[in-house]
Amino acid sequence: MKKLLMILVFAFLFVGCANTHTVTVTYEPNGGSILNMTSTVNSNSPQWYPLTPNKLNSYFVNWYLDSEFSVLYSPDALLENDEITLYAKYIEVDQEDFYLVAFVAVGGTFTPNQLIPSGGLLVAPSIPIIEGYTFLYWEYVNSMSNKQGEVNFLEPITEHLTLEAIYSTNNSYKTS
Image (cartoon, rainbow, N blue to C red; front, side, top):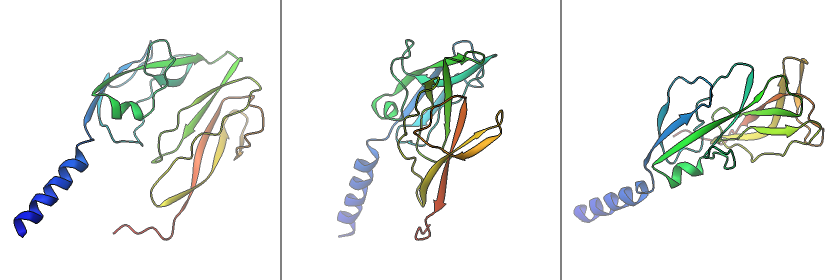
């Protein structure tokens, strides 16, 4: 009986872990600086954010899976590949045709930045998930205009913004 139980446990662990693998991520910063040119990550990492490069007089927009910037990176790419290359896209700081809206969901699932045409509307992203917390809203912070508050997705975008995910603790969550 013990032997059968051990076999069943081993089979469960083997099948449960079979879909997870290591992915090597190579960065193409396109003129930006980055600390590491490669990373290794578990394929089942919905909270994993790629490194953010810096480029003089530019804002980093997003990572893409192709050099033409047509396929936006998402954690799904980790599930489907053993190796990926990410290409950095930027906009110049002084241009005013588009505004960058950066999403910060520390610990939450991946939320890509958005590049919004001047006066355009922000698209509500998927709700970032953190186990044990309930997402409440996106809060904007802009140090240049000294504005802060809950995002109104019906208000036109007229400046670069950073949006932070605001959560409440789920009191029924137990860590044991």
